[in-house]
Image 1 (cartoon, each protein chain N blue to C red):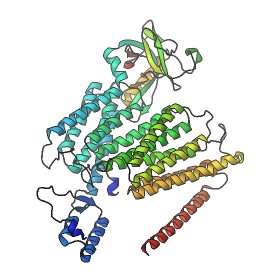
Image 2 (image 1 turned 45 degrees about the vertical axis):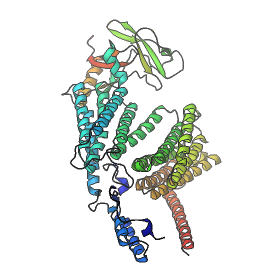
Image 3 (image 1 turned 90 degrees about the vertical axis):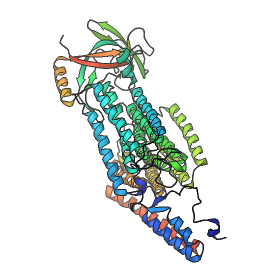
Image 4 (image 1 turned 135 degrees about the vertical axis):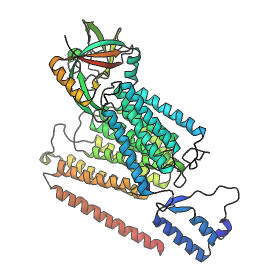
Length: 195
Length: 407
């Protein structure tokens, strides 16, 4: 590789016209502790990064903090996400099937609201709506062939994922889901259906 | 007027010592040879020649750059960073989801702090590692909260955080992570959301022009960052033209036309700003990217292939043949353009990507379209012969121009 191809580990400040690696007006000498400005900038940047990470998971964080807990029946499939490992992919037989016209008000696709109704110990979904319904509901998206409500995956260790899949094929399962007032949902538990 | 009258070999008292730049051994030899010649001609004196020489150091000769160390540190950082993300993926059952998240955050903060406490190459390695570790933080947060699998916005969060860190701490290592991750997110998001090939192609080509324009907009002090944007823009451009050349039909027009229109306006603005303040090299790169966008968009929108048609040459109409031939010429021209940009900017990674792109493209075309008519071997021979003839003609022209200039 040439000089131009290995930027990965060399900081700015070593090439023609390059600035100092510690910012304008400040230069770290070998063996010297960085100045307070460096630590302040680093602190602010790390905090901003942490906020970005939390923002990315906000639709799942919010219901865990302020949501209502409900139970939904599930049926599993078992794949792998390359970045995040083994998980059980879940489908919900009591939520609308986006491929069925009976479960849709219009041909429109995109943001979809599914009102939730309690039936015994579990909750079931009503027909897909395009405006926010009253009461408890799920905020979903039906752009794809699958309705996506933010509760389609249950991440566990690889061996546990297989065991859950095996159990569920026999008995089915109940997912415990927390739903906030904006319809964001987060799955917090998965148990075999003993009923 | 002699240089000695305008240039002084002495650093004025009180002024900081000029910074030492690194260069290749070949360039350094050329420079010292020229300086010797100027000295013999009396253009400069010995102290001036020495002062100029002292401003440069040969890379890897005890100067600030040490290639083997850089490579090993970069590779080591990538291995550790990817290992950390893999550790997240392994879903350690022994720890609760919150404990896992806190552990990954602690590792990430420790790496970032170490990046500040170390110097030069080691500092760069730790900053690169910090950018990779931030990806582990995002994925661990998503896993702890059971965010569904395959969500491209997690890559966006990773890229945004890594780039914020890269620019705030002036770390090219972190940008080396952030910029490709951002490009990967963009391509994934477009692929995930776009309804057809034409939309995907145009969106990727628009993204490539944005990346190349951003590269040109970086000031001289941030040139290292600009070069990363340029490399990513070139690769996206090649991917876009490759997709544009695919001989498949879409009957559903151009979904997302509104969003693409907004993208075009953004691209025009950025390209104009970049043209206004860029160097000739950057203008050439921008020209190649814009030409790829225009030609790729035209090819995407002109698809005289019925939706249900397989690649049966007997059923090809004249328009289909013209379109297929033009697609090959366009791809070869765009790849050639990027190879030239790579050579001009001393960015071999672009030239390599362009060359690899041509090989993959010709292989694909020979199997997808030409296989029933002429063999893949024939197409390779044909394309290779055309390229060699073009190269020979270009070389002769260059020599002629060179001899005319020197005579």
